[in-house]
Length: 639
Image (spheres, rainbow, N blue to C red):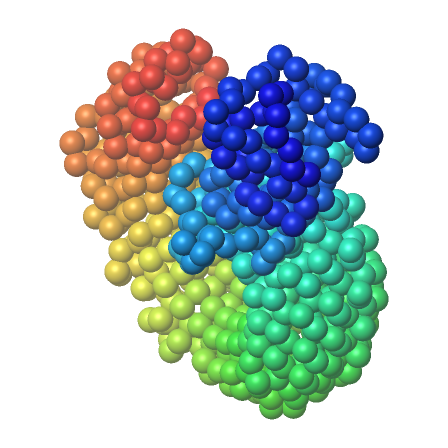
């Protein structure tokens, strides 16, 4: 349409760039007349109370918007209305006209415009050199995704998108994901968690446009099926990491396509997907055997066959996690170990698998010769014999963690220490009900000079005798965690403190109800020069005497927790007067004897604090807390 006359808009030349559908020209000698805007139909012009550009069909606007190459101007246009935003988000980045004078799209560094009240375009550039955006809960809407697709194009493009949860009223759908696909072809990482309205249509669009995709995470997406994974596999050959959790429609076909078309796949995690069976695992492992390094399989209906495939084809696997595999028996784990294919395996975690027995664990120890880190959780058929046999076979073991392995006793622990004395650096026992207090007269192995970390948590049978004996066996400890051990007293902890030769750095005694100031005084006297973290949460017999000892001896202490202790204002005053103390984190939660009189002490300590916990301190008023917040503006205060 082209016309001139006395009543047209005149702005001094072309109002919009010339396109194939529209050519509006207005000579420069006329003034703009806004009192009677116009609209046109097939037969006549009608006066309307709306801007003249709104009467243009979407096809015309589409051609106009294609010729706005600058990211800043495109964002400004998207702010006009939601319809313009949606139209702009429907344009693929490859369709945007590029000015011959610029040669490429203008990558401006200005602020990205906000589109209506629903969208905040605030994107930060991460260390990888591309933009990242995370939408949580109510912020996750199609409108925001459309705004992101339009706004980030002027900043080099979106590289990482994470959507966690969805707005129940205006949640993310295939439309929003398709807008991202069209506007962000540079997308490399996509994470979708609990977005039930996103299905195959949106992910197929991602596959069509985002060929650079490297990482894909789908969690609790019930509408996504094998169709999406097949499309991703066929169009995204650079995929290196795939995480699938609780996607009930994803099964063997999608995983087989990933194994066939994604030769660079390095990490795979599949959890609680009932349709994923042995064929999927065998296809993934056999196809990507040369590059696949991390495998996590949890809550799947796979059998011994899958473990045999892992043992044979997992030649590059360095990290393996197997959890909740109810259909896998002792034979599967035995074959996996004896297949001799896991020679590069460094870290292995097995949880809630009934197939782990003494026989199968020994086979794994013999087959995985380079294994350094082993974690066993809820292995109810594992006993001392299997644990000792495994320790004897796994000559490279450095880290061992046992959790809820109730048939393991103190004899098994001594056997581990005697067989791994040269390399074992960390030992952790959590909720192991079979651990009892060691009896006198048990033969003691040679001390372990390699063990640096000892963690025994919530083992109710563990007492003073076991603690004193472990102190003699582990003279080089630097980290000690005895949280939740109600049975230990000063009688057990004092020999441990005296046996440690190198100096303790981190000590966690939370929940040790029967410890008194005597233990803390010994700790600060022997290890005060090296101590950096001390947790006494719940040690109700600890008083101001301990804080005074800490103030006098612990120059390098940066993290102190005395929650639920019997401390008062006097103890905090002593801490604040210690010139050498450099506390960064202090917790006095639920200390009823700490009152408003501690405000000056807390202000002095606040010169170095970055975190202060005053929760449930009922003797501190809200006005005092307000003053502390104003004074310690660099410190995060919980109240």
